[in-house]
Length: 86
Image (cartoon, rainbow, N blue to C red):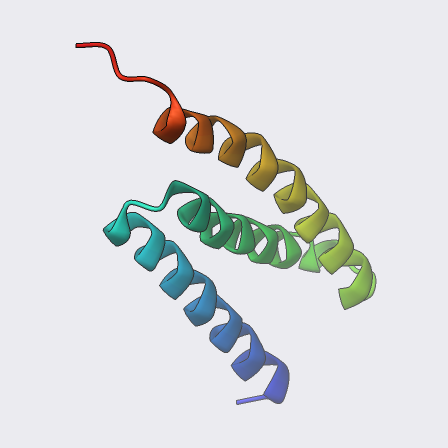
């Protein structure tokens, strides 16, 4: 296996672990962070047939994820601190 392939597998494993910990512990922002990493990795690999450098694809993929994570984490944090009506 090529070193780049092993690096990608390691990155997916780490992002999946972050997502799993966030889901199992009920930590929404952590789960969103892990999901954001996986979205970035997926977009990076989807753009592979288009060509271009790995740096360009990484910027696009993780740029999209950088928009996804904060937009999802703000409502998640607010829902935990909002008063509960009974």
